[in-house]
Image 1: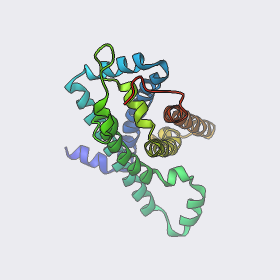
Image 2: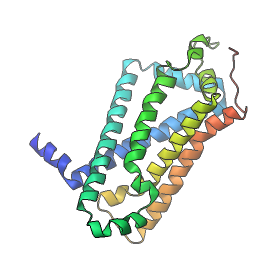
Image 3: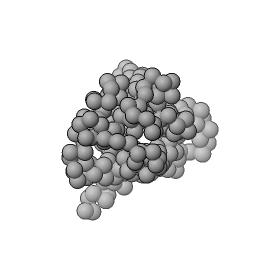
Image 4: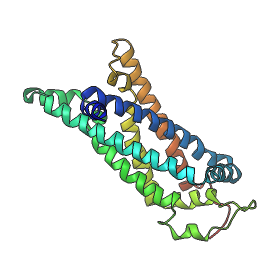
Length: 231
């Protein structure tokens, strides 16, 4: 236990925790996106996907709680690293370093906290379904499954909800654009030729994720995707 505590307090320990939790979350982000994009395949694909998750029973909530704990750990240790870096930075170089740093890197802590708030709201909205009374009015689909497809459409038809979602995905893209490209640097794997390529790949990945997630509310708002049942 003492070794674990010492590891989590050390600089390299914090960086490794941030990197490992980041990898777990990136895996979830990609998997969740692939699941959500099935809305473009129609109600059968989405409702089948959702029913498959629901069939996991209590295990699904174990996974959700685990992922939420990973998010909290990732944000906590990211903020700790930011604080440590500021304490270690000489005051005379503070302004110069601030200019060199990107907006994404400077806002890692804040964007992480805002994303945590969004995740809690997102769970309340689409998972627990306590923020929109219309969701309880939806009837089961022809195979007696909850109509997740129509729920998603009705949820994103709300301009405010879609706006919050898009802003959150923008913050996620900023977070990923810095986090994914700095992963290897956090582990001490720096290379003059490789580092710029990793940074570029990280930015491309981040904005592809942004495009994928935001395509769903935008398609709903534009009327390209419509619910299967009227309320």
